[in-house]
Length: 61
Image (cartoon, rainbow, N blue to C red; front, side, top):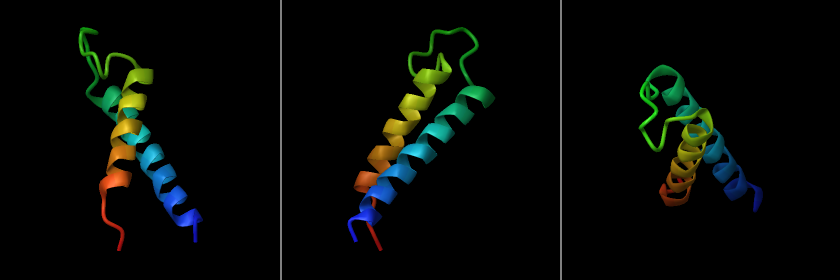
């Protein structure tokens, strides 16, 4: 039963990182002045943090 919360956190991290990279690829920051999405690494990390926050704060069914 302890695997379910870890799976939820892992999926939140992966989904967030994927969405962050997709944001960088599709929208991005053409000038390089956007602090959160200027590089793929920053965009992925920012998305992973947002995904982790979502996984921690969302209700479980």
